Image (cartoon, rainbow, N blue to C red; front, side, top):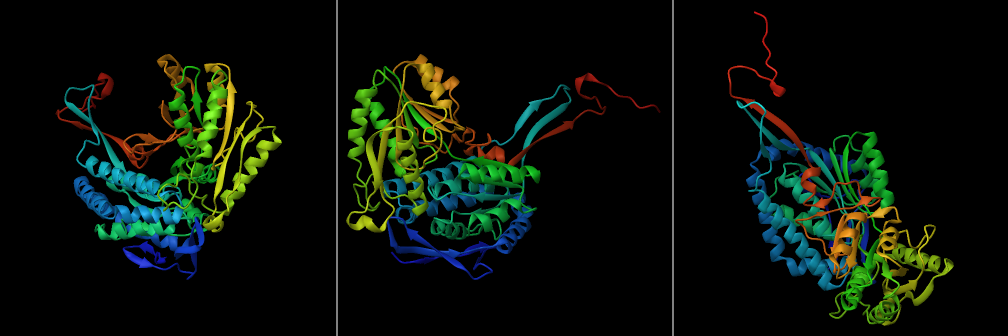
Length: 500
């Protein structure tokens, strides 16, 4: 694969970082392969991008919403044309198997198609006034310049989850892709240019969070920050935006779970748990590091789940039968090993010892094996309450539906969950009492769709979800009332006459 030299996109022009510095993006399956290099941008580069977006804002918002949708439709056609090439790039740069890389790109395409279609759908409301001679409306107006800071694990889909609704509504955008997947971000920038978006409407600035990301958040001329990433960074962004009276929509991590009840279909349960725990090597914010299972089924479930985990094929994502690729970087491996050590210190019964995988061609990548253990729930446990972001899985026995929900809720997070049961009363209880933003019944805890809101509660988000939920985050709802009479009559039936 040819090494790609990414560039910043500012005001429709390809630009190096002002410092002239660049950084490498390595294939996590084989660190000998440089996927590409990208500009190491600083505050000044962000300032230029924000200025470009601010200048382009009035012209972009003045376009017909339908016309803005046509730009996005053209972008969707280009994505469809390049679907396989984009899928391979995702696999090379972030390591997940090709079928998952393709799913990432298909989800991005679905987002583009959905947003383009929304251009011709109603985006306001007509409301009856208390006064018969008045018409009342609720309109949406763009908020202005939107900064999008996105993660590496869905390097095509998540940038479009946040950028495309922002663009359709008349905002201009600065995208700061993850420093782990800058080449995917650059390829999106190339497609935006090819689709004909006016200069400055969409800008892409590469770099690290402490430099480019932090300046984007703190810039006085960014009106909205959309962030997907870790709890620590998201919480920091919330604090900065609150001090600046700036709106932010924050998507953070999760300590998710599959809840398996005593009446569960074990075939469904084992399959759902395997997908929830090991897809993307456990590196999804909706990954389930916990399997909360009724003690009646736990022995049989655990036996079958361990057997399934042993069959997981670990390897390079371009190998057709690979189920689990590498972790993204060395820091991810160290975090995984730390969580495994903590589980042992907390007295876990270890079923699969996990560890690094270094055989043959895997020696040059960040490969690890599933770590599976059984541990009784404790509110003081580190491993049962903190996100591992790796194939690190606890089997937690419980004795009742109520205990299962209590155990699920006993973390600072509240993103995703699945419940496996044949009883509608049980899943309804879980639906109404568990803290989550994305829930599933007889399915894995993964599987988001773009036309649904995606986000969590508590430490997983601030109540402003991604995907279709972004439309609310990047617009103001304003009231607009028109009087058709020759007299002024106020609401609540109050008639006001001025003295002559």
